[in-house]
Amino acid sequence: MLRKAAAASFIGNFVEWFDYASYGYLATVIAVVFFPRSSPAAGLIAAYGVFAVSFIVRPIGGVIWGHLGDRIGRRTALSLSILIMSAATFLIALLPSYEQVGLWSPALLLLVRIVQGFSASGEYAGASAFLAEYAPAGRRGFYTSIVPASTAAGLLFGSLLVAAMHALLTPEQLHSWGWRLPFLLAAPFGLIGRYIRVRLEDTPKFQQLESAHHVAKAPIRELLGTHRRAIVIAFGVTCLNAVAFYIILSYMPTYLSTEMGMGESESFLATTISLAAYIGLIFLMGKLSDRLGRRTMLIAASVLFVLLTVPLFRGLAGAGFLGIVAIQIAFGALLTMNDGTLPCFLSEIFPTKVRYSGFALTFNSANALFGGTAPLIATWLIQATGSKLAPAWLLVAAAGVALAAMLASRETAWGELQDE
Image (cartoon, rainbow, N blue to C red; front, side):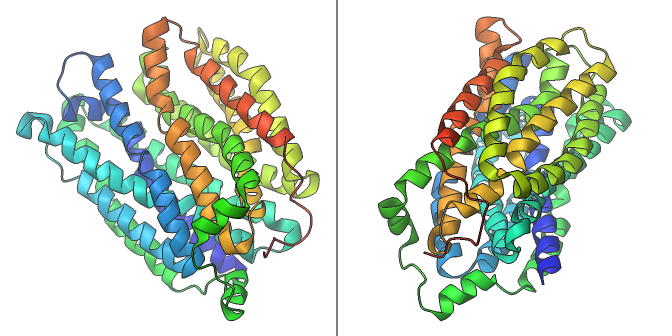
């Protein structure tokens, strides 16, 4: 059953994040297709603006999905979320361009992106809590690292597909119909993911809670009333994950092509190689967190981001292809220290009754404020300051917040999950 739960979490999360990442990797194309052609920078900022606005709904979605997951079960919530995400992503493939319908085009894109954001707000938290509640105590870090690994696998597949499209299609083909291909894949992928999930039983922890009639009637009220300290710590440490994830894994190909002068095919290839290394490293970090503790790993990640981010960004200027790949792998290694540990830490810091709600609220609030806006803020900061190091300083600030949060935390790795 543990293996089935791991497979279902991996495949379902892979599908959701491939759908979600396709937008980020096609941002330069979407800027041309859906927005007026004033200037490349303005179009890109508009595209990332839609990307950021869709995150506004994520805290609301986190509360709703958390309520469903804590009230009626993790499996039910996860099965619904993948269905909504796949349908919304498939609709993007059918949207008309700006040339066809004018301002209706970006308006419809925004509406569908908001639905995507609502769906994604239940996925990461639910899959992590699901696996944490199935995994044995000494291996929770390893098993929950499957969730960020599957997220990266979705990004990797999206990166490979977009890199192939840039290599095989002409710009005219890419802008007229090619950009629709990743979004069309959402329908069959989503049906496969849902089929796998509905065939699972809910977690033993939730079933025990249900049998004892201890399921919270109002999970969010109980969470806000008795777990405020955990909420602050969880939000703070997630700030680094939110900013780093979207800067390093989503925004970086665009940064390399628009700011570093790298070809789009080469920038996606570099990201693809680094993502493959990232997936391998994240399992190692999850396993290390079982040995060394979540607090140790998350503090180390924050310190290293503060010390190394600016030097690594400086190294991108003038670096050849192999140098850029090496720097991206280094960034990926730093992120895996946080990303490979965080799902387990956020599952452990909240008790079973409000685990889904606590994880979903804090994770999605941090991503709404600092994750989804990171590409937009980075692009705007570069334009405003003229400095290509602006994204680096954004990362350093997020690492400082995460470090302060973890210094105020206690170790959660040892022993069983909290029940009350």
